[in-house]
Structure formats: C-alpha cells, structure tokens
Image (cartoon, rainbow, N blue to C red; front, side, top):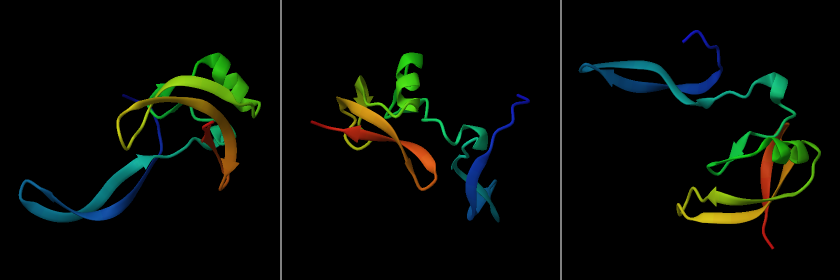
Length: 96
C-alpha cells in the first residue's frame, strides 16, 4: 500500500509449501517514537474520542463505557488514566 510502519518480531521455525525454514515472525507493531509520549488511541477494543484523548494526554482520569475484557470477552466500564511505565505511555484502569 506504500505505507511505512514498524513491527516487532522474532526468528522462528516455519513451513511453507512443505519446506521448513527459519524466518521472521511478526509479534506486533512497533510504536512510532514520535508518539511515545501519547496515550494509545484505543484500549480493550474501544477507541477513545478526541476529547477523551485530550484529557488522557493531560494525565486526567476519564470514565469510559464499552471496554471488552481480553480474558472473558465481557464488556465493562471504568475510569482510565494514561501513565508512563517502562518509558512508554500505557492505559491504567481504575475500578471503584
């Protein structure tokens, strides 16, 4: 498509058309270093609105509905806050 993006990965044993080889296996997408100090645009299957992202960038808590648990698949609501951990911004849920 002509778009550039970064990926993370590892070398792994693979098979293609019955032939075994060692090749690159993508494990995820790399974060754009220019956006390292910004919260992710979505979390737990829910995309943040521009207003919510603005508040998260300010370090404020935001109450959101419609998150989906990765473990159970159930929907949940909670307050979230963008915090810096291990050099990157992550979403931290706050349950009452």
